[in-house]
Image 1 (cartoon, chains in turn yellow, blue):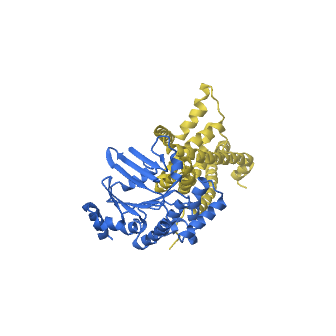
Image 2 (cartoon, helix red, strand yellow):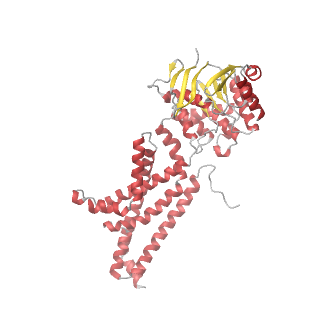
Image 3 (cartoon, each protein chain N blue to C red):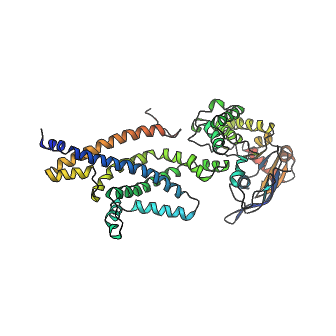
Amino acid sequence: MDAFVQDLIHYSPQILAGLKNTLLLMAIMSVTGIAGGIGLFYLSLAQNRFLRRGTERFISFFIGTPLLVHLFLMYYGLPPLGIRLSAFAVAVIGFTINVSAYNARYLMTAYNGLDKTQIEAARAQGFRFFQIFRLIILPQALRLSVPSLTNQVIQNLKDTSVAFLIQYPDFFAQMQEIASTNFQFFKTYVAAGLVYLALVSVIVAAARRLERKVALPGLETLGRA
Amino acid sequence: MALIDVQDLIKRFDGKEVLKGVTMSLSEGQSKVVMGASGCGKSTLLKCLNLLVSPTSGRIIFKGEDITRPDMDIHRLRQDIGFVFQHFALYTHLTVEENITLGLRKIKKMKTAAAREKAAFELERVGMIEHRNKYPAHLSGGQKQRAAIVRALAMDPAVLFLDEPTSALDPQMSREVVTVINKLYLDNITMLCVTHDPFLAKYISDSIVFMHEGVVVAEDVAERLFYEHEDPRVRQFYLSVIDHR
């Protein structure tokens, strides 16, 4: 058996533990990112002008600055100020804010494409703003954003590899350690890439199914002629 | 006593006066149509009456209560006024039945089964029962507008407002909707309708209010207003809309 494959088998508990950490982080930030995105989306529609503007600036700031800066700021920048967070906590907080900002932007874009007379009709019916958001705006914005939101989940999976830079023992961190032990850098990184590709393929297949299932009536993708 | 009593209503948008002191009233069981050229303020008037647009000044008395006072519960007011829009404004992610039951369940707090029963009753009334499980995207314009009328009616409002209910429809679909509104008229539903369509106006109104540049200039029954009114602006408007039919 090839020495490299033997290495992979030998380190498989370590690799699987890393994979588990990667999937855990991805799952958490995908859920918290959607929840945070919905929260920011709600605030960006607020009737209070200052709240609306503040939310927009918050979103722009986190989209406009690198994720790594936020992670380093929290992981290396906060301890001198007396705030010490674990790598996992930093990863969850940092990724959540970043992903929430992107998701809020996707939802806002979908909202801009909605027929606004529905909102006027809901107001005329006597619905309160929160009800309009929950019952009319959000279900449609979410369904229209499914392609962007699922692409973000794929991005989340790939971005978890950044977390190894703050000592989070994710899958890529384990592969990096193996490579620095056996010096098979090329093969190890190709293997890591293939694992990411396989995971992404699973997400893509699930995403396409979801897109077809939740497409808004009248906006379904047409089949071949 | 009038159900709605409008006194000297003024609305300005960025300094431009759209309503310049409108005074009119609507009694219970009465149906009135507001007509006038585009930009005369008739849609603004309708939206001021359920506070979708805030009036600049003037008084609106609804069921004996001044609704322009600052502490007015606008949500409670709107629940008492059915509103039908020109472009239907159905909730696109919901079926026809869900469009109707949403307000009943979430605002009127009805149980789902009771709300569905109410929706079925109202859909039957306008010949839409077989479309109850369809989404708005799968309906014709006439069917959409009939569904929108049912959605408003199902809430048992004190009055039904209709904002150009036929102007987004072709003649055949328009006739379909006129027939439905005419039926409501014959059932003595209190209505206030804004329209350009003299055919609709004739078949659904006890009287027609004619507006010109933000004020009411005439009010009379259709025949007298269209053919015999002394104000040349009224006759001219009627001739111009007839020409376009």
